[in-house]
Image (cartoon, rainbow, N blue to C red; front, side):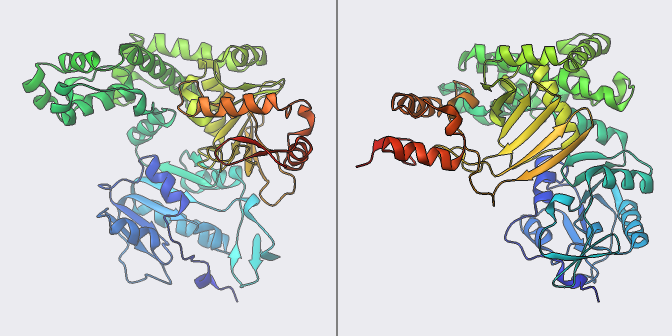
Length: 479
């Protein structure tokens, strides 16, 4: 007997798919959300307590709730616990029929199967608790959803997919998918007048930081207030410029231009489109940076074409002002993505289009000798002087596929050195990391680089040199 009642997990935080959907602004406080198959309802209760518009239904734990149409319907780890293929299809269609804007689907992937799944059953596995799990690969779940619903599917993360009802909502998601928010700490503000009008001026700052241009009147709710105080939005931004770093705004505008190119280059994969089909803010962005859609798409196409040439990738890697360059790859921290040359931004975005977001990955490996991108997870990157590798997703751009590798349970894991190379020099932690590397080099710890790339090799080198390194990134001597 299969115990579906035991598949609902008790959690102390939001499920990872729900966290990602919120981060992607698919699930929001004011959008109505219905969690179909919510289990014990932890996501529902947690967000409901924050006054979000969310309800949930589950056949075993919350069957009294009425199924209602909602802007967003989430189907989180439901499909994979249904052992009958026909029922899976029925549930998917039922959730889709309740969806007004976006259906969020999360499933378990093959790499998540472990020793708890003791024997095969139907097209899945039984656990020692008599629960069923069907593990998918990404292509399998994508193709299945598209065949059942007859619509395109967006890969949001490994095992997490979005299906949009309306083309407008799909285009808005595409437009913001490859946008990287510039850290606000880089915008320095120290002026009395700004502080007097900080609340209203902050909306202008946030918009320009996001789009690299001054907003149109129709794009801000606070336009009338701004006009009453400063005359025009443009004049308000001039006030902002007088109390911030003007060069920083030029830098932000260029990053936003590149982000728009990345979006348009990746948009090529989804077929032809008209300017009018794009979100209005994207239309304004295109006119501001390129003048016309034709010029923008031509530039984007040339950029995308260059990514198909490994010589172009080699050149871009060598010209990058950030990252650790090795004979086979360029490694960067994800916070440094917006510092990359445009070709590498598209190169990485092509991989993210296949695998989606990897929230736990904080280092990105851009392969130079093959068309691959790896997303590496080092959970203790900032605190551990030499953090070990926890896991990796490697995307093969030629085969349009990805693979997972776990290192948490392995002995002698790979570790990092020279962490300052992965981040931009403007990062406040750069000097701390660089000082540690200098001291380690002086101590002779890098004399045999082939020995120090793993935990055991590094420990042996420290022991041989009678050196210790504490969590504050300080080098000391042992007795």
